[in-house]
Length: 168
Image (cartoon, rainbow, N blue to C red; front, top):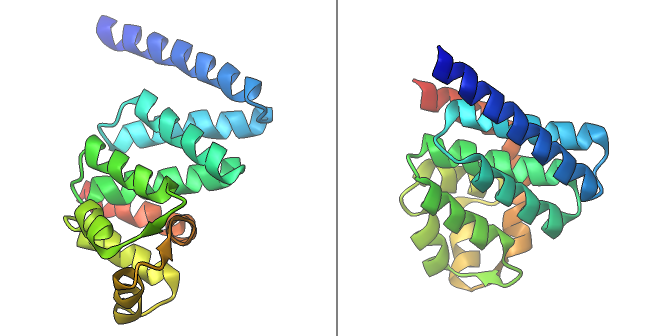
């Protein structure tokens, strides 16, 4: 009980510190609260460090300029990644792929998401393309990081389903 209390107090201190960093980065109090709250929610489901989650959020905030989109992409990667059994390192690889402003080819996509067909299928579904059309786009080297980000943002609406699947 003493250890649990100590961990709770440490988490609260860390959350307060993160809250300050988000507001210093220019987010409103509500946006900062949402970012900090998301870290706690993800940690309830996944063995991902708070620092790694905050790094993802920061990376996507810089990339998109939107706190909401940063949370959406973070949610998609952590929920589908965890539900698919991907470890923190593999999820960070997906984060790098999504952050790329270059094109994404079939080899890169397969190497990053090949072990996670559920995640890959969700991304394909959110592009609005058939699997064949998506694969043709990959093979031609014309899928962009921006298109991948858009699919991730759309996929975030299914993140709760992925967490539920993971819990079973």
